[in-house]
Image (cartoon, rainbow, N blue to C red; front, side, top):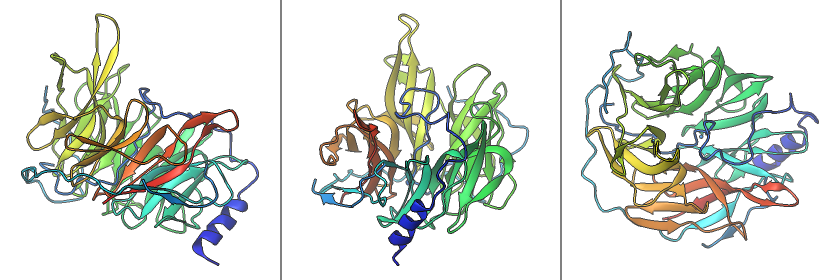
Length: 409
Protein backbone atom coordinates (compact mmCIF):
# COMPACT_ATOMS: atom_id res chain seq x y z
CA UNK A 1 0.00 0.00 0.00
CA UNK A 2 1.42 3.39 -1.00
CA UNK A 3 1.69 6.41 1.32
CA UNK A 4 -1.18 8.05 -0.56
CA UNK A 5 -3.34 4.94 -0.23
CA UNK A 6 -2.71 4.90 3.54
CA UNK A 7 -3.56 8.61 3.73
CA UNK A 8 -6.84 8.06 1.90
CA UNK A 9 -7.65 5.15 4.21
CA UNK A 10 -6.96 7.43 7.20
CA UNK A 11 -9.32 10.07 5.84
CA UNK A 12 -12.05 7.48 5.34
CA UNK A 13 -11.78 6.28 8.95
CA UNK A 14 -12.17 9.73 10.50
CA UNK A 15 -15.03 10.03 13.02
CA UNK A 16 -18.47 10.81 11.67
CA UNK A 17 -18.73 13.88 13.91
CA UNK A 18 -16.05 16.52 14.52
CA UNK A 19 -14.95 17.18 18.12
CA UNK A 20 -17.21 20.24 18.24
CA UNK A 21 -18.75 22.59 15.70
CA UNK A 22 -16.45 25.39 14.64
CA UNK A 23 -17.62 28.91 15.28
CA UNK A 24 -14.31 30.46 14.21
CA UNK A 25 -13.72 29.41 10.62
CA UNK A 26 -14.41 32.12 8.02
CA UNK A 27 -14.88 31.09 4.39
CA UNK A 28 -13.08 33.99 2.77
CA UNK A 29 -9.57 35.07 3.62
CA UNK A 30 -10.32 37.90 6.07
CA UNK A 31 -8.46 40.28 3.75
CA UNK A 32 -8.79 43.41 5.84
CA UNK A 33 -10.02 41.98 9.15
CA UNK A 34 -8.19 41.44 12.43
CA UNK A 35 -8.37 37.65 12.11
CA UNK A 36 -5.76 37.17 9.39
CA UNK A 37 -4.16 33.77 9.19
CA UNK A 38 -0.39 34.20 9.23
CA UNK A 39 0.29 32.36 6.04
CA UNK A 40 3.96 31.83 5.31
CA UNK A 41 6.36 31.32 5.32
CA UNK A 42 8.63 29.18 3.31
CA UNK A 43 11.19 32.00 3.05
CA UNK A 44 12.87 31.59 6.41
CA UNK A 45 14.93 34.79 6.80
CA UNK A 46 18.42 33.28 6.43
CA UNK A 47 21.18 35.70 7.61
CA UNK A 48 18.71 38.34 8.74
CA UNK A 49 20.36 41.60 9.66
CA UNK A 50 20.76 42.66 13.29
CA UNK A 51 18.60 40.37 13.97
CA UNK A 52 1.25 29.40 7.45
CA UNK A 53 -11.82 20.54 -0.60
CA UNK A 54 -10.06 18.98 -3.55
CA UNK A 55 -10.88 17.04 -6.70
CA UNK A 56 -9.71 13.47 -6.44
CA UNK A 57 -6.91 13.36 -8.98
CA UNK A 58 -3.80 15.35 -9.75
CA UNK A 59 -3.24 17.00 -13.08
CA UNK A 60 -0.84 19.63 -14.39
CA UNK A 61 -1.56 22.33 -16.94
CA UNK A 62 1.04 24.56 -18.55
CA UNK A 63 0.70 27.55 -17.77
CA UNK A 64 5.16 42.98 6.84
CA UNK A 65 9.02 56.38 13.84
CA UNK A 66 11.59 53.80 15.12
CA UNK A 67 11.55 53.27 18.84
CA UNK A 68 14.07 51.51 21.05
CA UNK A 69 12.14 50.41 24.15
CA UNK A 70 14.11 48.74 26.93
CA UNK A 71 12.43 45.43 27.79
CA UNK A 72 12.51 44.26 31.40
CA UNK A 73 14.41 41.14 30.43
CA UNK A 74 16.23 40.12 27.23
CA UNK A 75 14.24 38.12 24.74
CA UNK A 76 15.39 34.48 24.64
CA UNK A 77 17.38 33.66 21.55
CA UNK A 78 18.08 30.23 20.09
CA UNK A 79 21.31 31.50 18.55
CA UNK A 80 24.35 33.31 19.85
CA UNK A 81 24.65 35.69 16.91
CA UNK A 82 24.18 39.39 17.62
CA UNK A 83 26.17 40.87 14.75
CA UNK A 84 24.28 42.88 12.17
CA UNK A 85 25.03 41.99 8.59
CA UNK A 86 23.39 43.97 5.81
CA UNK A 87 22.07 42.03 2.84
CA UNK A 88 24.36 41.85 -0.15
CA UNK A 89 23.87 44.51 -2.84
CA UNK A 90 20.80 43.76 -4.87
CA UNK A 91 21.42 42.06 -8.18
CA UNK A 92 18.98 42.07 -11.04
CA UNK A 93 15.98 39.96 -10.08
CA UNK A 94 15.42 37.09 -12.54
CA UNK A 95 11.94 36.68 -14.00
CA UNK A 96 9.98 33.46 -13.32
CA UNK A 97 9.59 31.27 -16.38
CA UNK A 98 7.64 28.22 -17.47
CA UNK A 99 5.23 28.25 -14.51
CA UNK A 100 2.76 25.38 -14.16
CA UNK A 101 -0.13 24.67 -11.77
CA UNK A 102 -1.02 21.29 -10.28
CA UNK A 103 -4.10 20.21 -8.37
CA UNK A 104 -3.06 18.40 -5.18
CA UNK A 105 -4.74 15.05 -4.45
CA UNK A 106 -7.06 14.45 -1.48
CA UNK A 107 -8.58 11.06 -2.01
CA UNK A 108 -12.31 11.29 -2.63
CA UNK A 109 -12.81 14.54 -0.66
CA UNK A 110 -13.47 17.35 -3.08
CA UNK A 111 -13.19 20.51 -0.95
CA UNK A 112 -9.68 21.31 0.42
CA UNK A 113 -7.06 24.03 0.69
CA UNK A 114 -3.35 24.61 1.43
CA UNK A 115 -2.44 26.50 4.63
CA UNK A 116 1.39 26.47 4.68
CA UNK A 117 4.60 24.92 3.36
CA UNK A 118 8.28 24.36 4.19
CA UNK A 119 11.39 26.22 2.91
CA UNK A 120 12.38 23.43 0.53
CA UNK A 121 9.02 23.37 -1.24
CA UNK A 122 8.62 19.63 -0.63
CA UNK A 123 6.11 19.76 2.26
CA UNK A 124 2.65 21.32 2.18
CA UNK A 125 -0.04 21.39 4.86
CA UNK A 126 -3.72 21.92 4.38
CA UNK A 127 -7.28 21.19 5.39
CA UNK A 128 -9.91 18.93 3.87
CA UNK A 129 -13.64 19.20 4.39
CA UNK A 130 -15.33 15.78 4.57
CA UNK A 131 -18.98 15.66 5.71
CA UNK A 132 -17.78 15.05 9.28
CA UNK A 133 -16.03 18.44 9.58
CA UNK A 134 -12.59 19.98 9.00
CA UNK A 135 -9.42 17.84 9.14
CA UNK A 136 -5.75 18.67 8.65
CA UNK A 137 -3.60 16.93 6.04
CA UNK A 138 -0.02 17.05 4.72
CA UNK A 139 1.55 16.44 1.34
CA UNK A 140 5.16 15.58 0.54
CA UNK A 141 6.34 16.04 -3.03
CA UNK A 142 2.69 16.31 -4.03
CA UNK A 143 1.71 13.01 -2.38
CA UNK A 144 -0.85 12.93 0.42
CA UNK A 145 0.76 11.66 3.64
CA UNK A 146 -0.77 9.30 6.26
CA UNK A 147 -0.23 11.74 9.16
CA UNK A 148 -2.93 11.89 11.86
CA UNK A 149 -5.06 15.04 11.87
CA UNK A 150 -4.80 17.71 14.55
CA UNK A 151 -7.54 17.31 17.19
CA UNK A 152 -10.05 20.07 17.82
CA UNK A 153 -12.20 22.39 15.74
CA UNK A 154 -10.98 24.83 13.08
CA UNK A 155 -7.61 23.05 13.08
CA UNK A 156 -4.88 24.45 10.85
CA UNK A 157 -1.15 23.77 10.37
CA UNK A 158 0.30 27.29 10.07
CA UNK A 159 3.91 26.38 9.22
CA UNK A 160 6.29 23.50 8.48
CA UNK A 161 10.07 23.30 8.56
CA UNK A 162 12.35 21.49 6.13
CA UNK A 163 12.23 18.33 8.26
CA UNK A 164 8.47 18.16 7.90
CA UNK A 165 7.69 19.28 11.48
CA UNK A 166 4.38 21.14 11.41
CA UNK A 167 2.93 23.60 13.94
CA UNK A 168 -0.55 25.08 14.25
CA UNK A 169 -3.59 25.51 16.43
CA UNK A 170 -7.17 24.39 16.96
CA UNK A 171 -10.08 25.00 19.32
CA UNK A 172 -11.60 22.94 22.10
CA UNK A 173 -14.83 24.76 22.67
CA UNK A 174 -13.81 28.41 22.91
CA UNK A 175 -10.23 27.64 24.04
CA UNK A 176 -7.38 27.60 21.53
CA UNK A 177 -4.43 25.21 21.87
CA UNK A 178 -1.14 24.95 19.96
CA UNK A 179 0.10 21.68 18.47
CA UNK A 180 3.22 20.24 16.86
CA UNK A 181 3.51 17.21 14.60
CA UNK A 182 7.03 15.81 14.03
CA UNK A 183 5.84 12.92 11.92
CA UNK A 184 3.40 10.21 12.88
CA UNK A 185 2.13 11.93 16.04
CA UNK A 186 0.41 15.19 17.05
CA UNK A 187 1.29 16.71 20.46
CA UNK A 188 -0.06 19.75 22.30
CA UNK A 189 2.59 22.36 23.09
CA UNK A 190 3.17 23.43 26.70
CA UNK A 191 1.62 26.67 27.92
CA UNK A 192 -2.10 26.06 28.09
CA UNK A 193 -4.20 28.35 25.88
CA UNK A 194 -1.90 29.24 23.00
CA UNK A 195 -1.39 29.46 19.25
CA UNK A 196 1.62 28.42 17.14
CA UNK A 197 2.32 30.40 13.96
CA UNK A 198 5.81 29.49 12.76
CA UNK A 199 8.75 27.10 13.14
CA UNK A 200 12.29 27.34 11.78
CA UNK A 201 14.63 24.55 10.76
CA UNK A 202 16.23 24.56 14.24
CA UNK A 203 12.83 23.61 15.67
CA UNK A 204 12.20 26.92 17.45
CA UNK A 205 8.49 27.76 17.45
CA UNK A 206 6.88 31.23 17.53
CA UNK A 207 3.32 32.11 18.48
CA UNK A 208 1.31 33.50 21.38
CA UNK A 209 0.02 32.60 24.85
CA UNK A 210 -3.52 33.40 25.94
CA UNK A 211 -6.77 34.16 24.20
CA UNK A 212 -6.68 35.17 20.52
CA UNK A 213 -6.04 38.94 20.14
CA UNK A 214 -5.66 39.25 23.93
CA UNK A 215 -2.56 37.10 24.42
CA UNK A 216 1.17 37.83 24.55
CA UNK A 217 3.89 36.87 22.06
CA UNK A 218 5.82 33.74 22.92
CA UNK A 219 8.33 31.21 21.67
CA UNK A 220 9.12 27.58 22.40
CA UNK A 221 12.86 26.71 22.15
CA UNK A 222 11.82 23.23 21.06
CA UNK A 223 8.70 21.14 20.62
CA UNK A 224 9.07 19.69 24.14
CA UNK A 225 10.14 22.91 25.90
CA UNK A 226 8.10 25.23 28.09
CA UNK A 227 6.77 28.37 26.45
CA UNK A 228 8.73 31.59 27.00
CA UNK A 229 6.97 34.96 26.88
CA UNK A 230 8.56 37.55 24.61
CA UNK A 231 8.83 41.07 26.03
CA UNK A 232 6.35 43.76 25.08
CA UNK A 233 7.31 47.43 24.75
CA UNK A 234 6.13 49.86 27.42
CA UNK A 235 2.45 50.74 27.03
CA UNK A 236 1.60 47.69 24.94
CA UNK A 237 -0.58 44.95 26.41
CA UNK A 238 -0.87 42.21 23.82
CA UNK A 239 0.71 40.78 20.74
CA UNK A 240 1.69 37.70 18.77
CA UNK A 241 4.82 36.33 17.13
CA UNK A 242 4.01 35.48 13.54
CA UNK A 243 7.20 34.44 11.73
CA UNK A 244 10.69 33.26 12.68
CA UNK A 245 13.90 33.29 10.69
CA UNK A 246 16.63 30.67 10.65
CA UNK A 247 18.84 32.95 12.78
CA UNK A 248 16.13 33.25 15.43
CA UNK A 249 14.75 36.63 14.38
CA UNK A 250 11.06 36.87 15.21
CA UNK A 251 8.60 39.27 13.63
CA UNK A 252 5.07 39.82 14.84
CA UNK A 253 2.65 42.47 16.02
CA UNK A 254 2.06 44.27 19.33
CA UNK A 255 -0.92 46.34 20.35
CA UNK A 256 -2.13 48.73 23.01
CA UNK A 257 -5.46 48.27 24.74
CA UNK A 258 -8.38 48.65 22.32
CA UNK A 259 -6.10 49.15 19.31
CA UNK A 260 -4.92 47.05 16.39
CA UNK A 261 -1.48 45.49 16.17
CA UNK A 262 1.56 46.91 14.39
CA UNK A 263 4.89 45.38 13.39
CA UNK A 264 7.52 44.46 15.99
CA UNK A 265 10.91 42.70 15.93
CA UNK A 266 12.58 40.43 18.50
CA UNK A 267 16.19 40.20 17.37
CA UNK A 268 18.93 37.62 18.12
CA UNK A 269 20.74 38.44 21.33
CA UNK A 270 17.72 40.01 23.02
CA UNK A 271 17.28 43.38 21.29
CA UNK A 272 13.75 44.41 20.34
CA UNK A 273 12.19 47.28 18.43
CA UNK A 274 9.01 48.60 16.93
CA UNK A 275 9.04 48.71 13.17
CA UNK A 276 8.89 52.34 12.02
CA UNK A 277 5.94 53.68 10.07
CA UNK A 278 6.49 54.28 6.35
CA UNK A 279 5.27 57.45 4.65
CA UNK A 280 2.20 56.85 2.51
CA UNK A 281 0.84 59.60 0.25
CA UNK A 282 2.87 62.14 2.21
CA UNK A 283 1.47 60.98 5.55
CA UNK A 284 2.83 58.77 8.31
CA UNK A 285 1.16 55.35 8.16
CA UNK A 286 -1.13 54.33 11.01
CA UNK A 287 0.12 50.73 11.27
CA UNK A 288 2.34 48.23 9.52
CA UNK A 289 1.14 44.65 9.19
CA UNK A 290 3.96 42.15 8.50
CA UNK A 291 3.20 39.09 6.41
CA UNK A 292 6.54 37.31 5.98
CA UNK A 293 10.31 37.66 6.33
CA UNK A 294 13.13 36.54 4.10
CA UNK A 295 16.82 37.30 3.74
CA UNK A 296 16.81 40.49 5.84
CA UNK A 297 13.47 41.81 4.56
CA UNK A 298 10.02 41.95 6.14
CA UNK A 299 7.14 41.98 3.65
CA UNK A 300 3.70 43.37 4.41
CA UNK A 301 1.31 46.30 4.19
CA UNK A 302 1.22 49.86 5.51
CA UNK A 303 -2.20 50.85 6.85
CA UNK A 304 -3.25 54.50 6.47
CA UNK A 305 -6.42 55.68 8.21
CA UNK A 306 -7.68 58.96 6.77
CA UNK A 307 -9.52 61.21 9.21
CA UNK A 308 -10.96 63.29 6.37
CA UNK A 309 -13.34 60.64 5.14
CA UNK A 310 -12.84 57.76 7.60
CA UNK A 311 -11.39 55.52 4.89
CA UNK A 312 -8.55 53.00 5.25
CA UNK A 313 -5.91 52.47 2.60
CA UNK A 314 -3.32 49.74 2.19
CA UNK A 315 0.07 49.95 0.48
CA UNK A 316 2.47 47.04 -0.07
CA UNK A 317 6.05 47.47 1.18
CA UNK A 318 9.12 45.54 2.11
CA UNK A 319 11.28 46.64 5.06
CA UNK A 320 15.06 46.20 5.27
CA UNK A 321 15.96 45.30 8.85
CA UNK A 322 19.60 46.39 8.52
CA UNK A 323 19.00 49.82 6.98
CA UNK A 324 15.68 50.50 8.76
CA UNK A 325 14.16 51.62 5.46
CA UNK A 326 11.09 50.70 3.47
CA UNK A 327 10.71 50.06 -0.25
CA UNK A 328 7.32 50.34 -1.88
CA UNK A 329 6.50 47.30 -3.97
CA UNK A 330 5.93 47.76 -7.67
CA UNK A 331 2.29 46.73 -7.40
CA UNK A 332 -0.22 46.32 -4.54
CA UNK A 333 -0.44 42.75 -3.29
CA UNK A 334 -3.32 41.24 -1.35
CA UNK A 335 -2.27 39.59 1.90
CA UNK A 336 -0.11 37.77 2.43
CA UNK A 337 2.92 39.09 0.53
CA UNK A 338 5.46 36.26 0.83
CA UNK A 339 9.10 36.92 -0.06
CA UNK A 340 11.73 34.50 -1.33
CA UNK A 341 15.50 34.70 -1.06
CA UNK A 342 15.89 35.42 -4.77
CA UNK A 343 13.71 38.56 -4.49
CA UNK A 344 10.48 37.08 -5.84
CA UNK A 345 7.32 37.97 -3.95
CA UNK A 346 4.12 35.91 -4.00
CA UNK A 347 0.74 37.60 -3.62
CA UNK A 348 -2.59 38.28 -5.25
CA UNK A 349 -3.91 41.21 -7.24
CA UNK A 350 -7.05 43.23 -6.52
CA UNK A 351 -8.92 40.68 -8.60
CA UNK A 352 -7.59 37.80 -6.47
CA UNK A 353 -5.30 36.58 -9.24
CA UNK A 354 -2.10 34.80 -8.10
CA UNK A 355 1.12 36.57 -9.13
CA UNK A 356 4.87 36.54 -8.58
CA UNK A 357 6.51 39.95 -8.40
CA UNK A 358 10.11 40.00 -9.69
CA UNK A 359 11.45 43.54 -9.31
CA UNK A 360 8.97 45.61 -11.30
CA UNK A 361 7.80 42.66 -13.38
CA UNK A 362 4.45 41.12 -12.45
CA UNK A 363 4.16 37.51 -13.59
CA UNK A 364 0.66 36.08 -13.43
CA UNK A 365 0.60 32.48 -12.30
CA UNK A 366 -1.51 30.08 -14.35
CA UNK A 367 -5.11 29.49 -13.40
CA UNK A 368 -6.44 26.08 -12.51
CA UNK A 369 -9.19 25.04 -14.94
CA UNK A 370 -11.79 27.83 -15.12
CA UNK A 371 -11.23 29.10 -11.55
CA UNK A 372 -10.82 32.89 -11.28
CA UNK A 373 -10.16 33.75 -7.60
CA UNK A 374 -7.24 32.56 -5.46
CA UNK A 375 -5.56 32.83 -2.07
CA UNK A 376 -1.81 32.19 -1.82
CA UNK A 377 -0.30 30.71 1.33
CA UNK A 378 3.31 29.60 0.79
CA UNK A 379 6.47 30.20 -1.23
CA UNK A 380 9.66 28.15 -1.13
CA UNK A 381 12.94 29.80 -0.12
CA UNK A 382 14.18 29.65 -3.71
CA UNK A 383 10.88 31.07 -5.02
CA UNK A 384 10.34 28.21 -7.42
CA UNK A 385 7.44 26.50 -5.61
CA UNK A 386 4.29 28.30 -4.50
CA UNK A 387 1.00 27.08 -3.07
CA UNK A 388 -2.51 28.25 -2.33
CA UNK A 389 -6.09 27.50 -3.23
CA UNK A 390 -9.10 28.69 -5.18
CA UNK A 391 -11.88 30.73 -3.57
CA UNK A 392 -14.48 30.89 -6.34
CA UNK A 393 -18.09 30.69 -5.25
CA UNK A 394 -20.86 28.67 -6.86
CA UNK A 395 -24.40 27.53 -6.13
CA UNK A 396 -23.35 23.96 -5.35
CA UNK A 397 -20.42 24.26 -2.92
CA UNK A 398 -20.63 27.84 -1.75
CA UNK A 399 -16.85 28.40 -1.73
CA UNK A 400 -15.16 25.99 -4.14
CA UNK A 401 -11.74 25.47 -2.54
CA UNK A 402 -9.16 23.51 -4.55
CA UNK A 403 -5.58 23.03 -3.21
CA UNK A 404 -2.91 24.02 -5.71
CA UNK A 405 0.84 24.01 -6.19
CA UNK A 406 2.67 26.18 -8.71
CA UNK A 407 6.21 25.56 -9.92
CA UNK A 408 8.41 27.95 -11.93
CA UNK A 409 12.03 28.11 -12.97
